[in-house]
Amino acid sequence: MYKFISIILLLVIMGCAPENSNITLSSSLQKEVPQLDSSDVAYLTGRFDPAAHPLFEMIDIVHADRAGMYMRKEAYLAFKAMYEAAKKDGVDLVIRSAARNFDYQKGIWERKWTGQTILSNGQNAAQAYPDDSTRARRILEYSSMPGSSRHHWGTDVDFNSFDNSWFETGEGLQVFNWLEANASSYGFCRPYTIKNASRPYGYNEEKWHWSYVPLSKELTEKAALLDDSVFVGYLGDNTSKQIDILDHYILGINNDCNKHK
Image (cartoon, rainbow, N blue to C red; front, side, top):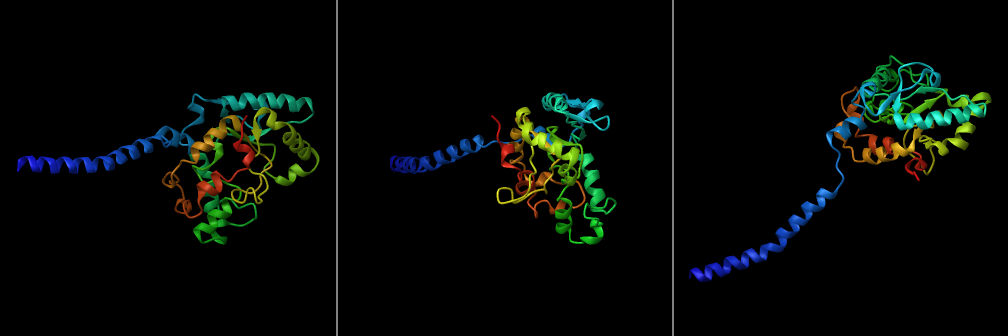
């Protein structure tokens, strides 16, 4: 009798073995999926102080319109080479904005959210757009939600003017044409080109915004792994999932900025 029971138990165990093997295999496969640790998330969402970060460097006032701005060291080194080349061609590149951490971006966002800062279309967002999602989308035409800005990374800079029309005539056109022709030689790309079939989502065109691709490409790939739960801690954060802040805005960039040779 005991021998018969032992045989039955052996058959049951053998019958379950393939299923258990599959479970083990699935677990090992899951471990191969890229994951972000807490330091990655903090960096990508700007929850740090660039002034205290070892990978960042303060921008010399000769290159900027004010003191106290920071960039990633590699990006700033590339910019300085580009700056000198542009200067030889009679083009003056002026950094207007560089690294902005979460708290800085939160200030920009919430001033627009509450109507303290008027939108570029002349409207008070708090009064004109009582619906949260609509208000968020209007602000997102030119300003990032805290935690979602490429400026958090220290790889992106704004040059000369925040007005697209400035880049369409005179000195502005000269600056823009030079950047379009030469910036890629120094690793820079314009992420927010005009929206069309190849870039249907994201921020409106920004002729002033340029990104250092040798660093930002990898950071963009890491940002694609972020979860909606990290976009919190500011007014209107309830809209981040509704408007798909990750796919439509963080990843809604010029495809050329995803390439680096």
